[in-house]
Length: 237
Ligand code: URA
Image (cartoon, rainbow, N blue to C red):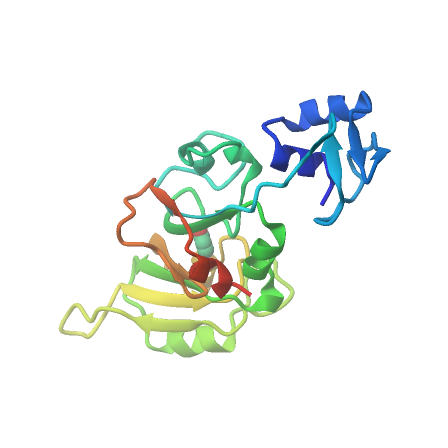
């Protein structure tokens, strides 16, 4: 990782403060003064600040139950970033592994481990994301096959990857349902909403229940979070 990032991870200093102390020549890597914050450092480097060895804080892995009207961004906009509600040191050094829209609720994974979040986000990794979807119109059986075969979304070069659609409730005498579970492995912009728009339906509620093997903890109310367990962390590969 970059040296300036390492300093932030192992001290209470901000990126700016780290830059200043680097400029002053207060930091040594393997005995040599380094002033360039972009220098790449590794776990086995001996990094000292004023003679004291720095140890990087271990990475953090969090699940949050995203509430409505919060945003998955590192800066507040019209709505507050959900990172405001993660009351840990330097919460804004964390990032969100797979964003949700402002009007989507449910499971959000938050970390400062870029390699781990890559395994969730990268389409190549085919990490399942399961959504509970409420629809304006009854879902048609034919949509199961349409989504399995892939949908052409406007502005995209290729079809969506095979997605699994399960109809949850049969609500009326016509065997119609407006609630489904959808499993996708990608995270294209507004993907779920656009997939249903492609079959002339409309998403009226969207809630993410699961990412890979990690299920949203029922004990978390909207806006609450907890650290992931070791098994949950290790389940993402
Ligand atoms: N797909 C969407 O359309 N919105 C989300 O928030 C997540 C997936």
